Image 1 (cartoon, rainbow, N blue to C red):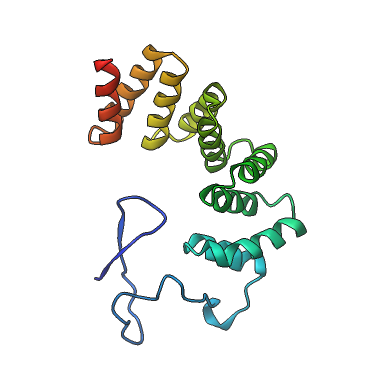
Image 2 (tube, helix red, strand yellow; image 1 turned 60 degrees about the vertical axis):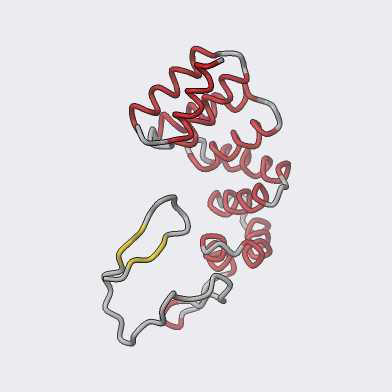
Length: 190
């Protein structure tokens, strides 16, 4: 079965077990290809915007998602994908407002919690990022990068003991995660 890269997760490959009617072209579709609804169906602007965001085409997604957000301001999924596009486009204030609104609607959403924490960390608001990342890790302990970011925030906030304990716990869960090991080495060498 052919292997293909996965673009929305790190270090993942999936095996395509489908049996196509016609042979597929090598390499698949271009990353900039227009999306078409499966089976000749019609996708809503919201769904198409989400699909473009997932496919890594933020330029095509943003207008569709902004329109969907105006129509349905309580759509948490739209808020989060739009916030991610803004954050990746260096529009942190716009992203922060959307993450906060998404969390008011669904306080358990890990992506919004992690994203808001990242924006606060970038703004030097370490003590505000810490509880967000702790909450995300309580819901999903496997977020290695979030745990490392939490340790960096704890370090910046002056809590070296908690930063070290956070990194040690992370390395117990993922012994091969180099960023955590490197940060722990730097912390201990201090």
